[in-house]
Length: 381
Image (cartoon, rainbow, N blue to C red; front, side, top):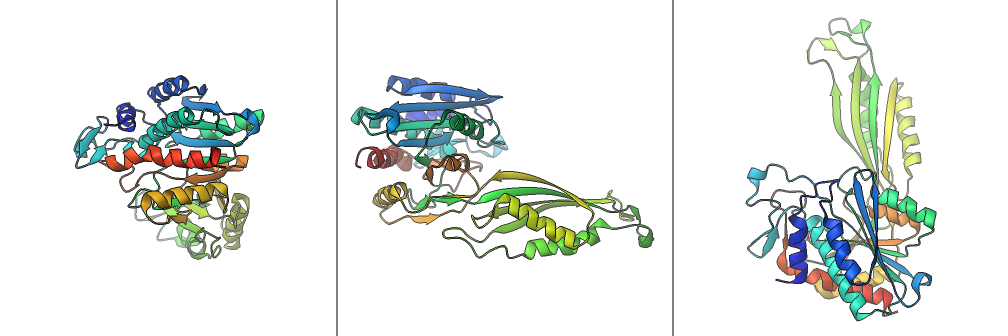
């Protein structure tokens, strides 16, 4: 098998369940140092972060292109439901199986192989090429890229272009180019009532009954009509809980969890204010706790998007779909540094599932794909 296949297997065999890195980054740093990269390990709390850079002919004066990824994986779930051990990489029917093969140790391995090849072929490339890895992407993302981004701000570290290796392809490698992501805003809403006997509703105040019209309005609200490559903003109620378990007791409190996925029409602050206005309009006694998971980001037409499109067209045989769908990624912390960000990776059909896998043929091509984009940005200028 190839270098990228072997390296992917080495990474998958390490049980790096978030936020554990299990030595993945040390393994990769050793390889990159041999290739001439300068590696810095940034550990915050229990999270490992690796920042590896190679400066070309103009050093810090030139553009900075960063490959962004993570070495942590989600838990495997019921191991007895896997056809093979999730941490023993196994090939079946042309696919490599194991936790993290698609999300995203295959991309990380391809990043490293592409970088090794690139600096060997172009030691005097323009600007700086870098690799940023974290072990806290699948978790709460507290001590990972957000902390590193703060360090970069303090240092004045510029990033012009960022390629994230998240599995973005739908059915064929390169058939989709992610050019942004929606923002995410989560809420824990607590509506206060007065507990009482169901036979004496006049002596109680039912928070469920009071909240239902407000929740219906929130769910039906037309926030916007979309924004360029973004769909309309959406609010989804994900959990409702109230009551003591008895059917003859009016509850004294209702708890509701909901999430908004939003486009650049909004900011988290404005969405919070709009939700508060709706809730207050229904006369509710409530408390709400917000969690801002990340603002939306968007990469308009420019050098990175054009280079990525051209390369993906060659790999997929047709121009890629360009959208901002899906959940969130760590690129949301890099974009505010002023970087143009795109996401390119293998087919995502099996990510986070039992029997996660990646096509061996796609895996073999990934380093060439990343190499081609890096070359277009830092050599063919």
